[in-house]
Length: 143
Image 1 (cartoon, rainbow, N blue to C red):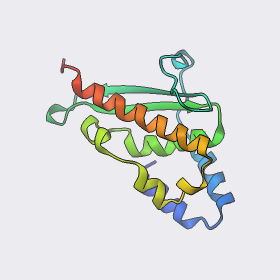
Image 2: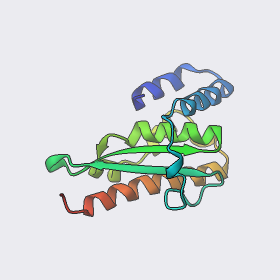
Image 3: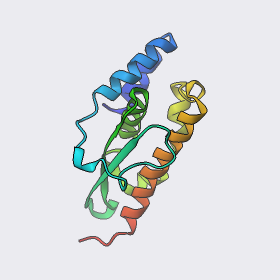
């Protein structure tokens, strides 16, 4: 899904019970995550739940590499947060990813004030991992 569609859908939902259900549904729609990628190297540190992220970079000419991500978690709501982050970041040039702050999106959908402190910390860890992967991709020589 596109991030604008997710934002629009959140704005249509009146109650936070409905929004949590939608968040869980977003997580269910994530593509299957390869078992072979459930490694310590792919695990996001700083999350109370188990979270794995896998970047895939492709050359994109002068724009630098374009990154796609796969992600998964053992927690339903966290999987939904991953789905939102992938909609925001996946498929974009590494420079854009590194420069994109997700806070306005989470404020617009009102999610920030409805996350526990633990989940907020985990969300920050996921964002830092994604943006770190983008910075790293920008430093790699083009082959």
